[in-house]
Length: 555
Image (tube, rainbow, N blue to C red; front, side, top):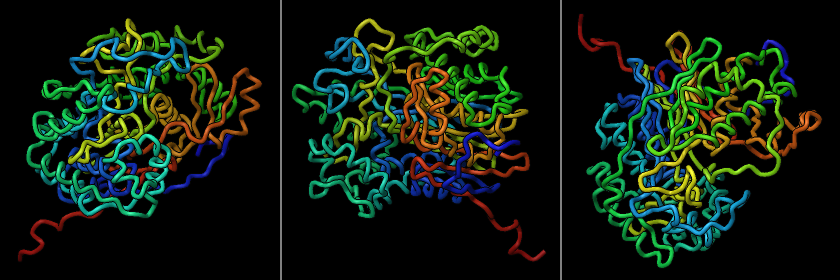
């Protein structure tokens, strides 16, 4: 793992796969199979990513949907990087006084009366996922769009097997899901969560996907699926939604420039605001660069103490200035500069915040795909419904589960994250790509809300500083803080007394962030894919290929 034994040893639970022909890693076996099907059919990484993401809307309905939001980071074969921002936004009728906050103080600062920003029609923001995926495929895909949608249709129409992970998610959210008869019919058969090993068929959703197959994004943004969504939102009584067909028609997925930083001879590429990762992963690595992390040893008290301080500083600056660049001035160049990191070294020695730190309601219920093809195209994409099963209901006759993105806005007027028409909220999504001498070394990402970008940073450090394999890097235990208590995963439990002796309040938690997946790239063209134990992550490597040209002809 490193040149010396780690202070905290751990054992990987999954195995990687390697190939030069293409690599697909998603957080569900059928999502991975869908992406692999596209590569095998001659498609590129973009075709594979869109097919995988659409399939995940079927088999991971708690995490992702066409009526959700997210971001995709593309590294194209010609060396260009671009980010497709498909984050949800507030509609034209949404305003800062939309909800009634229950508190002005943490930990209930973001809560509103009757949970109207969390459950039901009033929680739904303008969706972005489908528009973003269609834009990505139109500009950079290779296969016909109808082919890319086909695996999702197949699994929705014929059904799929419920994993224990999905069963657990349904059980966790059973009380909210039971309110809606439509989603209950699918996921709570007989009033109980669909059992692991049972089969779920989503016939209505299969028909919606067939509409998308022929009409593209217009089916939702200017067609029958959008009309069904708006009609359902209008029937919520006192909790009716605010979305209109005009909101859907006006929505634009945005192609944004990537943020580049550097760390120990590597280039770090990540998404710009409203995503926090490009800025603050770069900032955290800049803060770490003067320190000999390798000599400290993975998992040592010294290393964990430094990581906690670095993450705390990043969150302090994120709270000071982050958000939609159309509404908030984020000092990107300052935050990612080496000079600013040098100024901030003194802040690493300061104590953390006392008491609760105001946070956001970013959902940990998200999914991620990492995909690469033989031609050099790479997609690292993180997408979500926001909360577990989004707004907790299904649009009748469509199988569509809407997002609850309004949960992410500050319900208090006059704040940087207050509701405003067209505004997108900051996201911790971190689809990151690392390069050396212009060539890709690592593509990585994970779900997990505010724990995403600090976890991605730690995985990058695991590879560059500790010399871990990609499998070790994604499965390694994680640390997290926003400046108050420090969270440790179980494998770090033995370090709790040492961190407490350094003045930290330490909480042991089951997981920090969700199922990370990644691809490592070798100079000889080989790719190694890895997925971690925190989700149903599955790796598929494409080997072999077509026959040598002319093999069936006499020479």
